[in-house]
Length: 133
Ligand SMILES: [Zn+2]
Image (cartoon, rainbow, N blue to C red; front, side):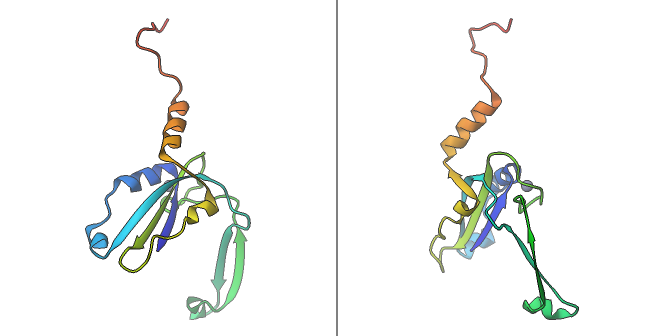
């Protein structure tokens, strides 16, 4: 199973791209969810360093670096705004659909709510019978 969190722009691009035929042939499938992003408590990365190759085996000095924002797994930029996109991939032939990990990073939004939010963001459209002045 792999999981990725994308900014809205990158997420919409990923949603449009079809699953690679080779991945599909190997049994991979995916789901996308819109998420209202929230930085989880204690969010950060752990770096393991050493002066030799032992870090490759997970042996070495461990350093936790707290992060105050989520980063897009595609462009690497901070995820800003009210809506981001989560992608989950898994092999149907060897595992069941993964649990909803997306809840760790915010609230899952139904596509209808995203459509309403997008419509509100664009503002009201002038009615056909109204004159602009
Ligand atoms: Zn991005």
